Image 1 (cartoon, rainbow, N blue to C red):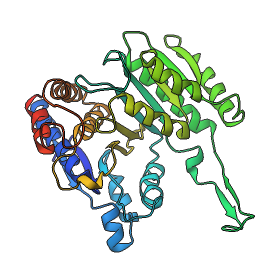
Image 2: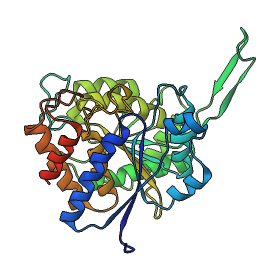
Image 3: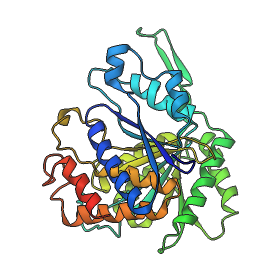
Length: 357
């Protein structure tokens, strides 16, 4: 392998994660041959199954090993026998914080042939991006309990915002909006709740306005988060790029995922944009344990994640080639995006995308 080899750590994880990840890897290998990109894939056994057997989520040695990769392709982490919060906090959140993946990128694009619950809306109407700050807010774990499990219990959960964390996310969103260069007009919308969360979100609004002065070519707007949820459903075509806080981003991206046809097609990236940073890309659908091993789960979201990986790694042509192939498959091949109703098996959908590269 040369120094220019694209080295990807593959974490298939739990449930159907390994199945959809295998199809994403299949497509990456195929587009690599076409675009002459040398790739190396290394598997890591991390997830709920391993935790149930060993009590270990991820070791320091594994974190050190993963840090040497610029990209991680994640299938899914989640097991019905593991209590909620264990894998999320000690594995997924730990990786986001350890690798300083301070951008969560969620493209919201309705693909041809994919149904949306919004009457009268099509692919031209639902095509925007949410940039979510990914390492601060309520997710820092600041807080605690006093007199737990008594009638006098007190629980606190503190949202933490820093100027550095806020500005680097907002600045990245402006740059991404400029690069995206929406032909309908470049617009960046800040989503927060400044009328109530006056301290933390006041910092966000002041920082947003200050950075905006450096980007006169980009129109700016502000939505309270509740208004955003309304307008996202009523007029999704209004949005180009949204930048928002960690907590609100977590919520509105699930709403956005349904608008684009469900979690079977939605993908996201946890990105460290800095030189030498380690980023992670994943489908949003979760481990879907009831479909494990049946070869019926939809791999489109995982393949979308692979396209995101290529884009962020600088392989724009390869990324666009994968996305075009996906649109052919969803628009003219697949009967549905629902598991077991696609008209094809998981592996066959992966083959179809590969054939249309």
